[in-house]
Image (cartoon, rainbow, N blue to C red; front, side, top):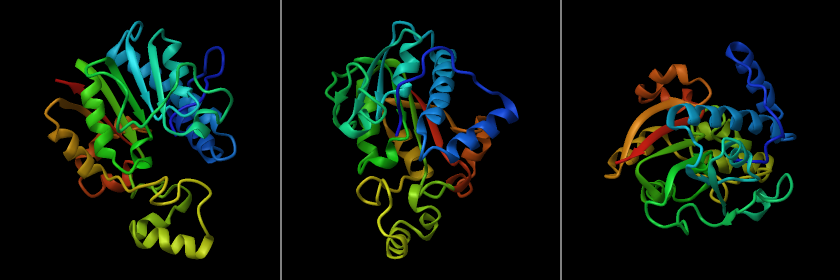
Length: 251
C-alpha cells in the first residue's frame, strides 16, 4: 500500500535514533492503525523529493498505487499537481473518501500520454503486481525527458518480504506460501499469487538499468539510506535492504 489522506497541519518528523524507534513502533502497529506510519513516511518522502527534484511546486506527479492517498496529500501540500492511481477501490476508500481526482487504473497500463509527467512516485507497489517490469516500462513511458522516478518496494527475502506470511518467505516463493497456508490458513491480506509476488533487488535493478530511457541515479535502503553500500552486496542486499529504493531519471 502506498497512500492515505494526510493529517491536517504539519507532521512532526523525528530524526536520528528517535526516527528509527518511531518508525519501528508505528510499523509494528501498522496492521491495526496504518495511518500514523504512512503519514510519517509520506511527510518524509515529500520533503526528500522536494529537496532532490524540487521545488515540486507546479510539477505534475503520478502517484502509482496511491491507496487512500497519504503520499498524494503530502505532495499536494507542496503545491504539486498529483495524479493518484490505484486499481483497487477498497484501497482508495480505506480511510475515507478516495483522493480527489483518483484514477481507477492499472499501473502497468496507465491511461496517460507519453512524456506527460515530471515525476513518478511508486511506493510499495512492485511486490503487489504480477508484472513489475510492465510498471517500470510505464514509468519510463510517461516521464518527460529529465523527469524523475522513485521506485520502492519490499524485496522478497527481506525481513518483511512475506508480509503476513513472514518469515515463511525465506523458504522460497513456492514452498513458503504453501507451508504457511497449510499451517495457518490463507493470510489476512495479499495472498501469494493474488496480492503478493516475489520481487528481488538484483533482477529488478538489472531490468531498470536495461531500459534505454532510464538512468539509475541511486539505489538505497528506504529506512536507512545512509547504508546505501548494502545495495552493492549482491546476496546481502536481498535480505538487508528491507525496502529497496531505486531513483531514476528519464534520459
